[in-house]
Length: 60
Image 1: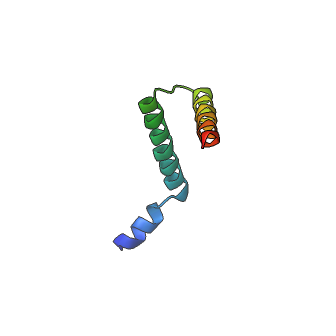
Image 2 (image 1 turned 135 degrees about the vertical axis):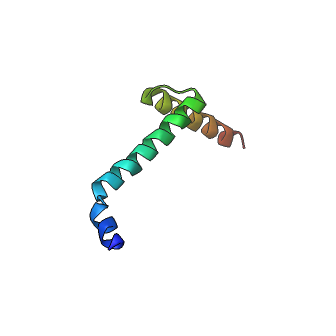
Image 3 (image 1 turned 135 degrees about the horizontal axis):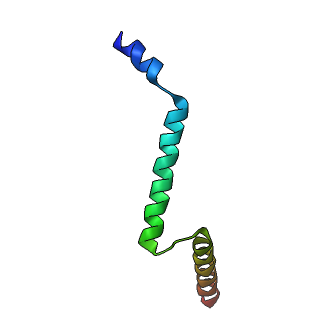
């Protein structure tokens, strides 16, 4: 009987929301760790690193 109750209480949408919340909180934590506040800053940092790596490969 307990199993039936647990199955009825399972809400896939709530699970999806919890999963999305976990992903977003991880992104926020990572951004704070890197000193980034906006998506634009993330994009800029990615572009800088791409340029840096491309220049390093050209040297070899």
